[in-house]
Image 1 (tube, rainbow, N blue to C red):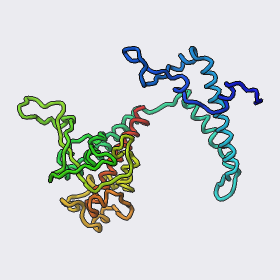
Image 2: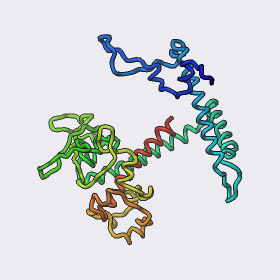
Image 3: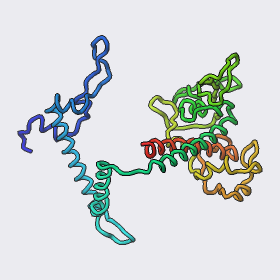
Image 4: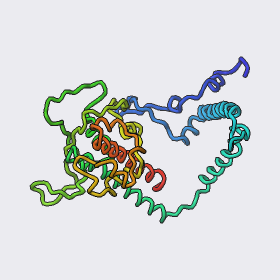
Length: 323
């Protein structure tokens, strides 16, 4: 472009701006004063009422997409494509031969749709729900050894999980002293699935109140939310549990006979090897030492791994089966 470019051209080549910064409008309060919340009108409205700005914004999309394509193409053309030990060309050749046709196929699938076996998906969903219940109950049973009401908790509630592991009032940088002999508990309302009657009631209420308290003083984390609470993301939980094979997550509570389990946890390793579980295949996370190592540490890691599994199963059902 020449040096006589207009301001529009300069903006076009300078970089793409977020839609909210161009088209966003502050939401009006009841008194007519602009608030802090910025709203974005629907695309069809922008195309009609902000036509010129919308065209410029779309042009920026095209320009930046082309820039990205050229940059990635250059990198791929300098990377060799190996197949069975010999060079077949560059990774850009691989992209053209394999990924481009695959992309075309995906577009066709999205535009035309695909047939699915609803009966089969329904069966898979039921299996997923059943597996989720198994691992959720495993976590509840373990936690109830340290906090009785944990057997009734909602494992999908970050607030309740955080209360058990860290005390939900704790934040990074804050030190709270507790001089009482017993840990402080917090009240939560949960569904009364057990149909427990409260004193003086003729029928069970829909919800009941449970008490949850912190079950471990030694569990630490370096991952925090934006509000500075301990994070319970998948990455954070995996640090606590580390590498626990899936078959072991399900096996401990469901296929283990009573002779291998005591009040202190799982018994000798040589007995476990007879059942097909090899602890050498596991690498335990920070929960292991926090709960004192040994059988209690193993159980703790396996329980946290089960908690991770509930989230993974839920994502699978929601994102790939139901939809």
